[in-house]
Length: 109
Image (tube, rainbow, N blue to C red; front, side, top):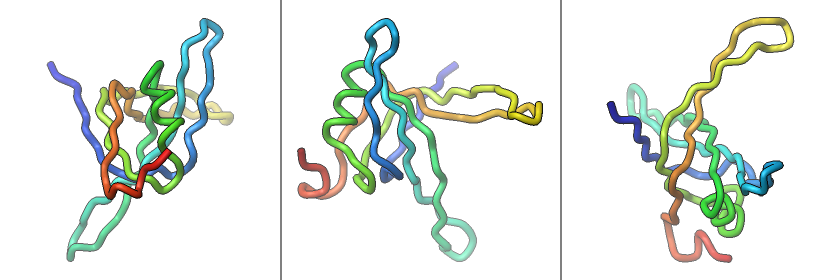
């Protein structure tokens, strides 16, 4: 079996760098990914992503809201209960890698 996702999109908000209790860097962010439906109508899907260690530091240092990014990682589901006791499921990309895309002026430090 193989679980690998590669997406290109724009960050929907600034990523925030956090550190776990064991000292590991991580950040969560989401990206808007375009898709086309009937009649070439453009729509967007909003995908949550999590980056760890050096990748988290890289994303937080060089990317901000609206910047294009390519993320590669594994699709992972998370099951939880909301405040009303309803079972929910959410999907996210656990990043193994992130990189620049777009124009040269699009991602500057």
